[in-house]
Amino acid sequence: MRRRSKAKHSELTKRELEVLLELGRGKTNQEMSEDLFIGIKTVKTHVSNILQKLELEDRTQAAIYVHEQRLLDQTEKSGR
Image (cartoon, rainbow, N blue to C red):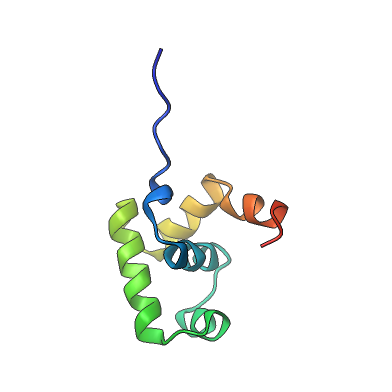
């Protein structure tokens, strides 16, 4: 029997996960900066870290990942 591997996004920090979810919602860096109360440079750093950790090429792939993993569905159910 094969053990189910841990989802890649479980390695993200809490803030990186928040940024990932915002990517999944199609938000720009500017919008994420305003919504999360962080600087644009910080958003860019988080996006870069997310892409590296999830082994993705760009933010479009990150948005697809969010939807494939149903991460938005999970956060909406938990009231986030």
